[in-house]
Length: 154
Image (cartoon, rainbow, N blue to C red; front, side, top):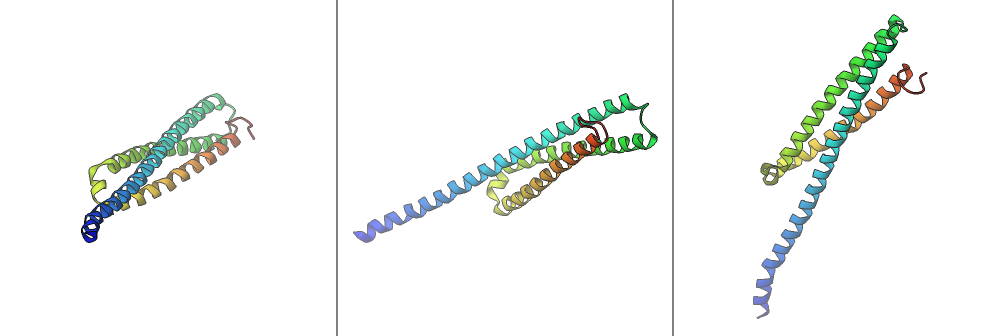
């Protein structure tokens, strides 16, 4: 009788363990999705921030054109070009991150463990790029301020 009960309980115990693992895996995937969505939002904000800085620089250039030396004018144009390039990059990274989120939600990711692992690695790389972009924007804003374009000037 004991053997019969034990043999009936064993499959449900294994099944419960499997369900626990699936639940834990589901929670990890949900956390990863939330992190990706936050990263996408951060990148969208950075893109907007760069566009604002670019607009500000354009207005500054128009107002100060007559007062700038040729060297200041050249420096300002270079800074504006860098800001434009970073803005494009932020926009492209935002688009790539949105595609990454779409892929993560797709059925292929749920069925292929190796693909899921690769996506986790890609997510880590994108996280690093996001943090690097944020740091770059901070530096660009300091440079813009030093050039006389922000509050505080030199």
